[in-house]
Length: 104
Image 1 (cartoon, one colour):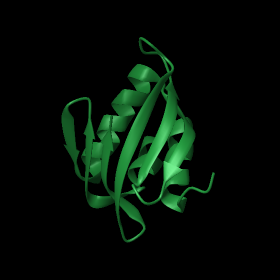
Image 2 (image 1 turned 30 degrees about the vertical axis):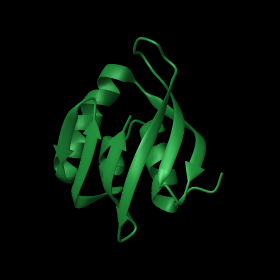
Image 3 (image 1 turned 60 degrees about the horizontal axis):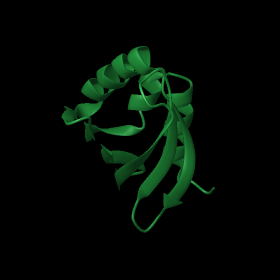
Image 4 (image 1 turned 135 degrees about the horizontal axis):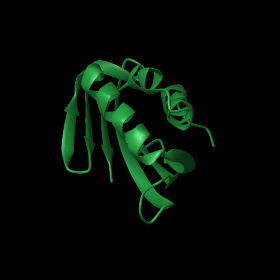
């Protein structure tokens, strides 16, 4: 699967539980929408993913990427009820980084 560089990096850093490197895939003013909550800016995103990594130990396996729709469908496995589950990540990009991410 031919993923954009920043998406491939995001998957790699998630699977390595590297919260700082994960946050560096985003712009300073990025927004993440996940589990009904909004996380604004790189520092908040780093705190959110660090907490999620500790709680869920979630890893991502890319299943399908759509360049036109800017979506990535993944199989997410971890220490949460119902694991593994299929999730879709909706992206907006700016200057080679992620400006917006919505996880459903």
